[in-house]
Length: 410
Image 1 (cartoon, rainbow, N blue to C red):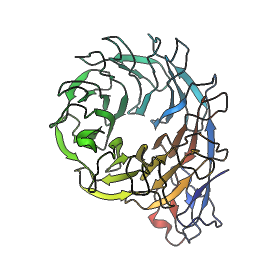
Image 2 (cartoon, rainbow, N blue to C red):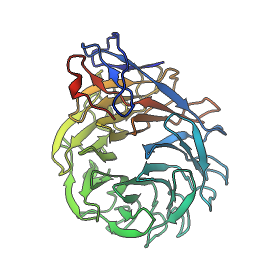
Image 3 (cartoon, rainbow, N blue to C red):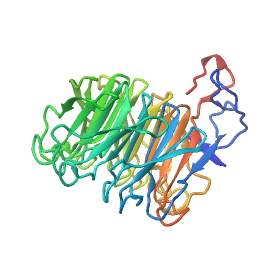
Image 4 (cartoon, rainbow, N blue to C red):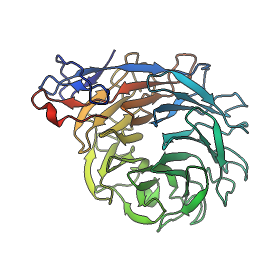
C-alpha cells in the first residue's frame, strides 16, 4: 500500500466514505494527518526493455492513456500508447496506421472531450521530424492523422498535445516563423480540422514556444521555456486570440518557466523545473487565474533538494493540482514523487509508490481527472531496463469530520 503524507508527516486513523457520485473520499481524522490511498500499478501487456512506458500519461473521458515512445512494434522507436479504464484494466494498445522507425509515437498523449490524441514528433511526412499527431476514439480506433498546414522539417509538431473544451492543441516547438526554433502551436477541432496556427506576439528565435500545451476552462496555454532565457507562457482563447503573456513574479535566468503547463478548474499551473529556491535545479510551480494573475508559488514542503526537478510535470483537475518531482530521493535515489495541492496551493499530500526503486523517476509525467491521479515512472525496470510503469491513485479529498456539508469530490 502507498500512503498520502500530510505536511507534518504524521499518521492517524482514517476511513473512506463515498461522495454522491461514488468517488471515494479520503476522510481525515481531524488533525491534518495521513490517510491511505488505493494504488494500482499498470504496465504494458507486452512490455519490453527500453520501451519507456509512462513517459507521458493522461486521464480523461473515463480513460487512462500511457505513452511508450520507444516501443519497437513498427521499427526502432516507432512508439505506441496504451488505453486503460479507470481501474487499470488494459482496453487497447494503439500504434499509428503508418508507423515507422523513429516516429516516437507516444511521446505525448492527451484524453478528453471523448477523444484520445497521441503525438509522434519524429514522423517525417514533410521532412525529418516535421511531426504529426493522431486522433482516436475511446476504444482505440484511429479516426484521423493530423499534420500542420505548413509543416516543415524540424518543426517537431506533436512534441506536446492537449485535448479539451472541444479543441485539440498541438505544439511545434521547432517551427521557425519568428526565427529558428521560435516555435508555434496549432488548434484543431475534434475531427482534426485545423482552425488556426498561433505564435507568440513577441516570438523570437530559440523561444521554443509550443514546448508544452494545455487546454481547458475555455483557455489554451502554451509554454515557451527559453523565452528571454528564463521562460514564459501565453494564454489564448479557444479561437487562438492571445489574452496575455505570463511569467513568474521572481523569474530568473535558466528557470525554464513553461516547461510544463496545465489548465482546468479555473486555474493555470506552470512548472519551472530549473528554479533554484531549494538548491540548484530544485524546481517550483506557479498558480494563476484564467486572466494570468499569479495567485501562488508552490514548492515541496519537505526541504526540496538540488536536482529534484519539481515541476517537471504539472496537472490540474477535480479541484486538485498535481506536481511531479521525478528525481526526488526520498526512498532510493531518483525514485521520484508527486505532490497534491488544493486550488489555492495548500499542500494536501505527497505520494510515492509502494515498490519505489532507484531511478524509477516516478513523477516524470502526471495527470488528474475522472477521480484519479495518474503518475508515470518511465524508467522503472519491472520487465526489463527502462521498460516503465505507471500508477493510478484515487484523487485525495481530505476533509475534517466536523463539517461534511462542505465536502468536495473529484
